[in-house]
Length: 104
Image 1 (tube, rainbow, N blue to C red):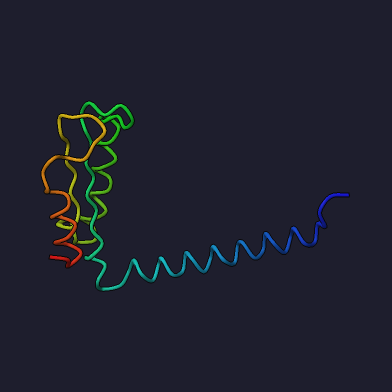
Image 2 (cartoon, rainbow, N blue to C red):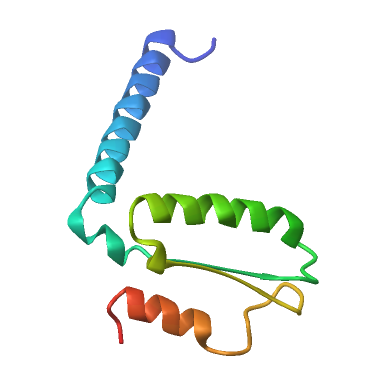
């Protein structure tokens, strides 16, 4: 005999309630005055074998528009480098994130 349908239904309901609580928390956090501390640094290599830079560019533009609409465009940075799937060899990304997260 399979699982009890009433138990399955209650598990689904519990999952939905949990996801709703999570969404509410995220929504409240997103609209806090300190949202500007949420920085995004996206870096893609032009020879990246995992992420196609031609697809990353338009997606980065979408993210940039969101940050611009929220008037926090300085907290977003998109950068391309000439190498493959690796972090840039300089410290620009780490410095950017630390600066926007108040870590130095």
